[in-house]
Length: 314
Image 1 (cartoon, rainbow, N blue to C red):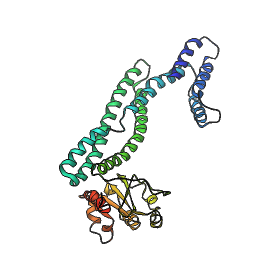
Image 2: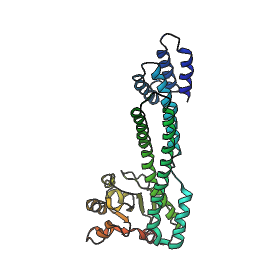
Image 3: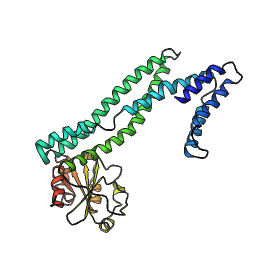
Image 4: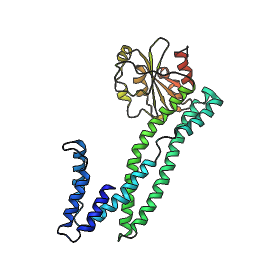
């Protein structure tokens, strides 16, 4: 907003001056670099950004377009992304509690899958309404300009692409936290205490929760929809390191069980990883009948019962 205000104010007073475009370019550069330190990362990024803008500004009409894009495209886009939810915790907790109150541990699979599904659908509905609203406003603001339909469609398409790129990053983060949130809720609901990670333990592995067993060893719990991108990194936490830090096992709560291959289960299972899968999933039913893989998979409905067995005093 500060950049737009500066450029628009200068635009009004510089039309009759020599080289007005150069004046407006300098003002744009000054505002972009404002508040950054020489040689700092922000200054380098701002200078690179200005260099890209500079290539597109040749005349006064380009300045007008630049201001239009800032005011009517980028600012609404930023506001729209901000509105897209990252969490709606209380709403989902109330639903999950109702199921667990009625079905106790037998409702685990339903709660986890429903929580994940509702969070995604709720956020997608908000995303859809936001992009629908802002596209209509942008289309109406384009009408006074002399764009033909093809050019207008290109602008609208570019907006949707940028919206999807940004919200996609937010969606990944939201999807990863969703399962962690519901697992935290389940542990709290059944009164299973969590603890901190073993001192000095470091590995290429993401563990969301730690539970201490009755013999003062640790079980790490990783809460993810899928291990598709991480399983080879996870395998680097080998059994010797786990023994050194008194880590008994690493348990993975995985809802999208069809992404697990036999190779993945065999490698990680041999390194004391256990997979909790939906009871009725094909992956669980197949692995549970395999003479080797059945040692590494357990039904999701046994998750709480197995944790209690590891800590009987709970």
